[in-house]
Length: 237
Image (cartoon, rainbow, N blue to C red):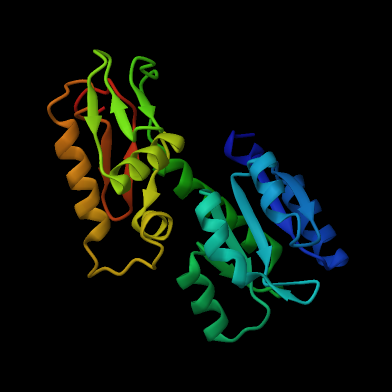
């Protein structure tokens, strides 16, 4: 059994028969499934359980869970699969536009749900970047909004640059998409024509370039976004 098969999945589903069948099937193939049957506890459970993937029914106790996807994406950085309420293409497209990684229907064969879930988790595992040991000498001074180097030199940052670095440091080693960064920092959806996120990252990188231990801290991930790999990372690590 692989490490992938042992990964924890959160199933948010209020229909007992479907939840039981899917849980038994996924667990019989090595995944760990935690079930939640309401949306009120979604965010606390996500933060405490730290699942690698979430299977979220679109309708839970009469509530449309798609309304929570954007907010969920600011807190959760694993794979998100939506179980669509209907077979309408509009529901599926909306779920994907809001931040879902895959959309399935309840009529789909369980083995296909498993296959797509595994593929989704593999994509997120591949996106995780190995990081060097943390450099405790570098720290963020939140009161002054400065990055303090190992020589106690303050790197002055704008508010947005500081928020960007703080966000990326908190998700060290995890690739953050432009969608996630735009939503968290600029409070608007990302558009391919919008260069604000890329420009902000470029500004921050320029300020770090003069410090050898910080120059390679932020890496680009082609077609996805950016990842903070830590201070002291060698080039290309």
